[in-house]
Image (cartoon, rainbow, N blue to C red; front, side, top):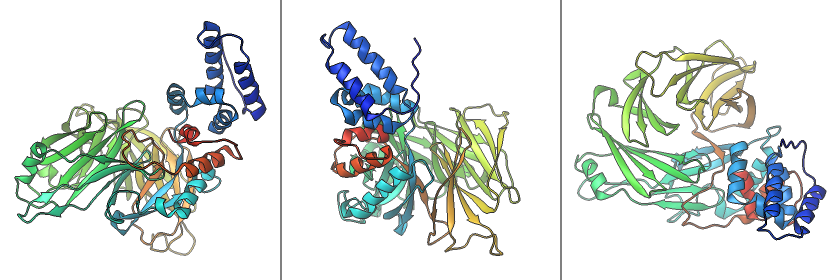
Length: 455
């Protein structure tokens, strides 16, 4: 049997389905009832718009139970990726951030506007992370991925000259949920502390783990002086443990920069080798190197490819308003060359540069030409665009005038937080955003319906 569902689902249609379920003369445990429920689920799952599902869930309790069940939400989120809502612009060395919402005609503009109002109107949900434990400003934002943010305190040096690892939390900034990450155990930290050297800083990454996206990993690398071994710690929220991997020092690992995450691998670019990456498999905890072709281009990004098991490299040339896409296997053979996959045209009339590649998007920054200069300077009106690495669709996201041209920016979308030991709150924000995303008023909407949009 083939089921098709075209167009939206009206409130009248929702009520009709609800009445049919309620008036069925047989008990719920009968095979007939189960068959009808399964048929309704198959109809609902084929709706094109999440807003239709939100309306259906608000129309009656029978549909609400089906739509907000964990099994149904898993299927929905496999078909509908969580929306990209905007950018987080870091300020004051990461102790504060400003939310830049997606602007019309972007498809997420209505939901993003509701999120922006939440940041602006509620002092407890502001971007200084005041809902986290400790004093306001103690926390430094280190990484954002799939709506989860990892923050750390600033590390300190004890009286005997040793350093202490920072405190770490993972949070959902909008929903004000956070999870304290347990400290790295003494036996894992002992080899680092025994070196008797200072730590300049720490690299931190957060990444989802597991098929349902309910668990996550935190990657931590102490930035040690040249000549020290490379040690990376990985925390798993599902196992609630830290693990460690160490790579003996060599000339190539003297300086590691630009930490990123893709397909279960953390990786760093090597200052002393312009054509190599150091990767860590966060599941097997083993290090290895990947070589890529040298390209003489001013703007380049290497990261997650649309095809699992491959890395993508995006290049922008000086003269061409195009992006060149190459890809290479993460675990490929030494003599395997990176393949040229596509050349994507960009809009004319802009000076382009690449900012970041992550979460299925290439983030681009464009400056409108026409005032006699083609250089990026502080105070410029800048346009931010996203390029979908699967569909190659270029969309304008928002505009901004940052204080400096090297502002650190992160995409922002939602993600559930599996470890919940923080405060909850923000129900009214979730409701307003759900209503905005649905494009109207929906009586009786509660927070769990927001799971349709945020996962």
